[in-house]
Length: 417
Image (cartoon, rainbow, N blue to C red; front, top):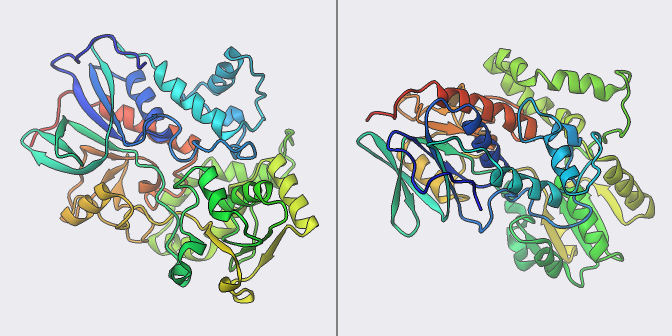
């Protein structure tokens, strides 16, 4: 049950529709109430049955762990041990530099929402449903559900999570032998698709490939896994023990702490050059595997169960199954979310100039096709790519949520038409 001190919000409450129910939505909600200066009516709208895990932390496979230390994964800004204390309350001794399972982390996010402190006069609600449009009416937004009914909002938070992987037209003719998105179904369905496969091609060599390779090898230990990418680079690995500033990872993490400020200081030309020429190498050292997963992947490669190849060195048609493990497509791409399609069609949002996210200004408001800043809409996560570079990790979401909460708190009355 959600914490709701009263069945209805106070008449003067600011109505905030949070569209999406994953990590970004939970972290945003926690910070909205923490920073509230007046009553809030926060309405979380998520099409899935549960709020908290989202797609990223819904997996239950035991080898699927988070890709950062527990002390960096708190849902609450300025409280790095929030996750660790929650685990301790469940009898789980989670060290600061441990890597919990994604299943456990999803449960933590759900609990963080259930336990959120809702101030007197405010209310937290959630609705299971799919939002397909936002309609402007005098003094408010109308959030339009697929069924046709609407809900009012003064402010809208788009916390839709990551889009699916990039489309791969080269493999479209493979039919049922091609898995376009391994995350859209639970692990059992992916394994059912792979049943009986002896040769499996994984397109991409990033963190998604690592997870899928570990999952499929456990289900099909005799299968031959081949991973391909143009660069042939695997993610690097974290180290479990502190290095006291003597390891290259410390240098990367030092830069990472200021990455978005550095990004903002680049010229448009240099931003484009980074995105085109250097982004992949940055991702390889920035987005790292847990030590346990790194050890497992190394074992798969030594045994020959997993091999790396270049795309031109393989014939996709010779594999029993081909799985798309590439990175997610741009948020401002049609076809993956009906709400995004509607907002693009109406000009409420537009692609950014790099084609990686939504054209936006700080602290995360989209700029419509007429050049107006829509300061009653707030972007979280992948939609902000281009405005910032690091946007989807939990520390990034915390930073965004803090800025969102401060922005909403500074507003003393609902929006006007």
